[in-house]
Image 1 (cartoon, rainbow, N blue to C red):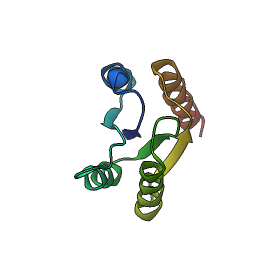
Image 2 (image 1 turned 120 degrees about the vertical axis):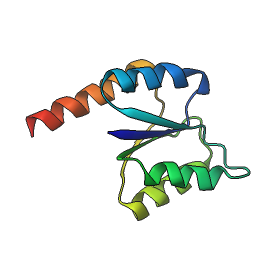
Image 3 (image 1 turned 135 degrees about the vertical axis):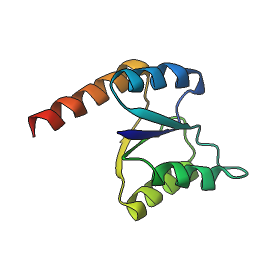
Image 4 (image 1 turned 90 degrees about the vertical axis):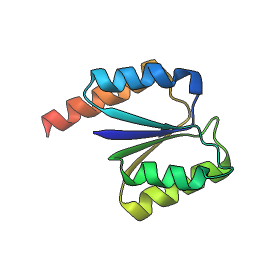
Length: 103
């Protein structure tokens, strides 16, 4: 599964990508920066994703709105969360894998 994480602490990007890879997923990270080509880049990442995770604690209102609207328009699953540290990220992916296998 390809996952896009929007927002969050950029210093965790490597750790989160490694967790995703270990669990058989690919992770795209967008820092939530909307200046320049930020909106365009975010929309392209969402378009090629199966799951979009948006952190609300560190993102601007604009970044959250753009992510929400693009996910809805493109039919991508969206999960909003206050924050996403490596432990929470692993728990979320493990829970999703367990739920998918049970179905």
